[in-house]
Length: 98
Image (cartoon, rainbow, N blue to C red):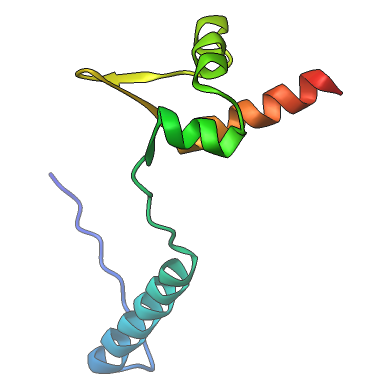
């Protein structure tokens, strides 16, 4: 036989209890909303944009692709680079030089 559980609350009306719960949930949602940071979609850059940012030639870019310094993505005939990974590659290149 199932045992039922009963919770009794004294000194507060059902309406007051409901309002207290709603206010607490709203306060928590406000905290979550203030700390919320939407996920940004990956931004892809062209070879020319990457070469300009890094101030290198397209030949150097191709060489860095072959050496695994940069990670190119093929989209059909196009080659693109993720901006976030480009920033990581710059940090990696700089740490190797120091």
